[in-house]
Length: 310
Figure 1 (spheres, one colour):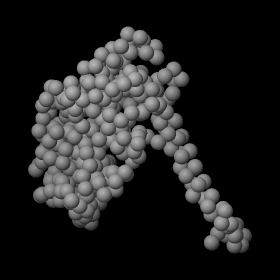
Figure 2 (cartoon, rainbow, N blue to C red):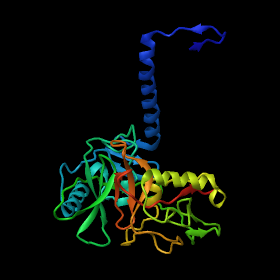
Figure 3 (cartoon, helix red, strand yellow):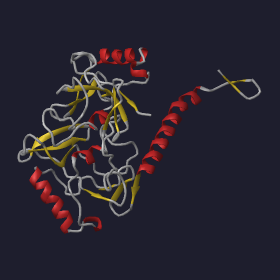
Figure 4 (cartoon, rainbow, N blue to C red):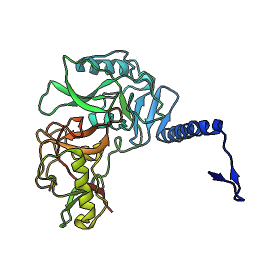
């Protein structure tokens, strides 16, 4: 029931009830479109700058018009530079972190931010990052769902989405790094000064691989016990876990000189549900850096907890 400002009951027609969800959807679309407009700057010359990262992308996500092996992809970008594509000669294949910065796993087909301005979107894209353990493989990203995987440079065909650095942003200028990255707080927690995240020092909270519902229960238990003095612990997001990966390392791929204890070279549960198939949960594998999804009750993974540092 709905009342007006004088307390009188208002009647709502069936037609109006039908329109309410439609209007809500329209409002949601407008809000997301505005958010995308705030993030992405369309220069109207075939290029888009991501204000969040400072990277400039081609608006056409397939400017080379085809799928290529990795070596051909490098040549295709060189061809774009020779033609001064969109007025620039410094295009390149993005590294894995740069390309991953565009992924939004809360949506699929494509897994790009709602309201994005990009055109001609394909599925698999090469990065310029070679895998650390096999020089004949390179990282690639699946923009239908958001998987991060690797493929054979010679035998696999993927698309080319070139990037260049614009004049500002975390990728073009780089974050100012403190001399020391990890701070052991002496209370069972570790703060990462680079990401601003606080992790439990114990990287294997359940002392074994467990199912996702049990992982969520473990987090609730930490909060109920006010672990290390905090009650806002959560399962990390995919990007939270990825901040700890160093793509130059191999098995485990975690960054050097970390202070964590009982860290495992294997897959860790994230908090993120696969929106196409909600029975599956995104995981990050610290054995090989892959981002993939697994059944929440048929698979077991490690569990870790994170919170925003103060």
